[in-house]
Image 1 (tube, rainbow, N blue to C red):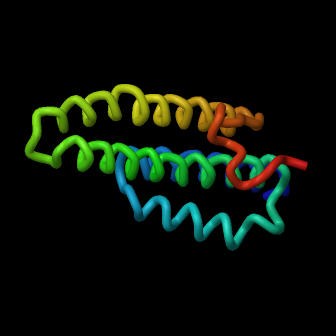
Image 2 (image 1 turned 45 degrees about the horizontal axis):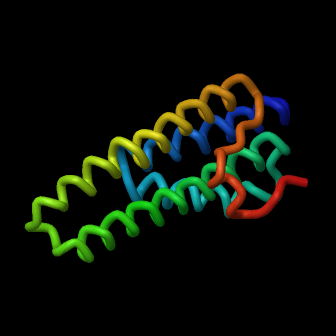
Length: 129
């Protein structure tokens, strides 16, 4: 397999693990993504490095958003208050759905061999060279 095809495959894998973390296997998919990031980042193609950096950054931000949503619930009175459902519904319709949509867009770009930068949250791990 040539280097470009390997880089494209690694970029698609990174985006797929990002979506799996949000939708199917939270935590497990994140651990796999971080493991691939640490193991494959130094020798990866520019496209793969870009998608790895973006997905790890976006996953960290997704975790931060989830912690903030839980903190808001606790501040508003805990999990047995009616306001809990307001926070949960707003979080899932605004934050979570947006992250999933951006992940699907990132996956389609990776499959096309193109770069994709998550708006606002894609630069946590530094700028692209």
